[in-house]
Image (cartoon, rainbow, N blue to C red):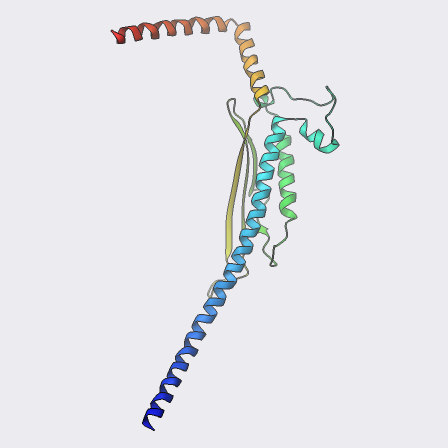
Amino acid sequence: MDNRDEKKKKNSGESGMMIVEATIVFPVMFIIIFLLIFMGNGYYQKSRIEAFVNAAAIEGAARCVDPMLSHIEENGSVPDFGTVDNEPYRYVFGGMDTIEENINTYFKDKVAGLNSGFFNGMQPIYNPSTNIGVEFNKSFIASSFDVNFDYKIRMPIRLLGESDNLHMFVSLHNEIPVMDSPDFIQNTDMVEDYLERFGIADDIHNALNKITEMSSKAREWFNR
């Protein structure tokens, strides 16, 4: 009888420990599983928005290189010569504000049409006037078109003692180089024309010849 009583006490003790462990482990396990599911939906949203950022940067860089691209996209055909302004020397004197505004509108429309993914209430939260940055960085040597987007996604989970839900903060950036070889050649020709017109080209040529002569003499002296 004593052995049976001891076995019953052991079994009841083990079952009690299992109940205690289950009450602790199962809720934590379910919380982790749901958190992983919600985080997965957040990263799914991030991948979709990142595709919009990349597409907007590529589209902006392409329009900066080719001013006729907008006409081709709208009408589906190449315009006749002289009907579209090619905007020569637009990199030097500006003229990219319209492209920046159009790409900004294009990107905001894409993000505004984004649904919440697999769960309600997980759309990106942002301020269109401050969290979206579309900019053409002008440089004579190497220009670029940048798109920046900062936002957060509200997770449907709230920790104990917190007054607000968890948030997933994301900052996206893409920079596409704007390389227009014909325009660079035009700018270089323009500089050469101005140098020749004001007689500076000859002075620069003579100065370079003197530097070459000095460098050759310096090499001869060091080689002795």
